[in-house]
Image (cartoon, rainbow, N blue to C red; front, top):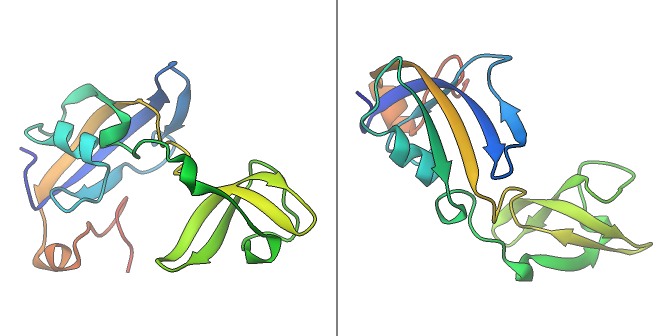
Length: 159
């Protein structure tokens, strides 16, 4: 049964509230995470608790328990020279910028010659998400995994 300090491997299909598929793990290895250590979004981790190997379920996650509500204050104009990740930028591209809190991912909204409008909200912020989940395995975490705060091995963190 899934509870704190268990390593869970699962396949999923992620869709938005209109039913459009956004991503799927079925083309590769199952995702692995250490339960109870905030390695996945809160709402999905809550839905996983108490489930077992072989369980299949659909979890509908509201924005507050997913990637948060959209914050219009996170859309701002910055100098183009601060964008990292490409030489030529177009709207819709993802860039990295350095902030007071470290690196942050932003989406380019509008390009100017010297200034760019970026959105620092997570691309899935403000959206209700649906995860179609199939639990592949559940096991006890190793002492090292608990100490590191994440799953190791296939589908998890590789050191």
